[in-house]
Image (cartoon, one colour):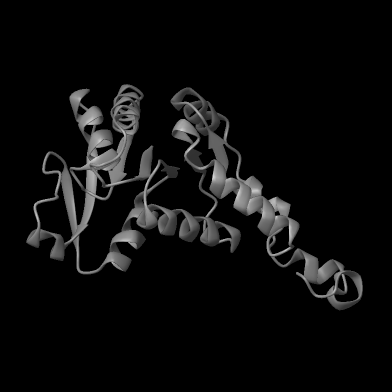
Length: 201
């Protein structure tokens, strides 16, 4: 399975995140999975790749050509080059059989919400997993609860991704995964929005 991992490129983060990345990379290799990632050598991104290669695993890095201007590329992997960030994300999304979102910054959040939106719209049925190391995503998950409470999103959307605290939970979920059918517009077919809830949905 090609596991696409979205995660941090920062080196200034707590070392516990780096260690979690290396451990997860080793686990990917030990289970025979291929890593698809952003080809960075720093932060959690580089840590996952190092751990995987340490155990002899295969890694495919996708990186825009303009990153040649800075020394950030993890070279010990197969490289796919793109012209733009948008093309980079598309290739990673197409290549990935599953997506694991580890702690990261705004780029990681963008990647998570894009892949979730595409699943919500029925563009794919691949598993999406938040690897919630150190409770990193707790606040984001609370924000999503507020969005559901305010009816900007349905609670069924939460079933489109899984939150895991350990690598073991992730692999167990992947082994048992069954695609979840979700119709974003179901409420339009079953209710009169204006009369029933004031148009909040």
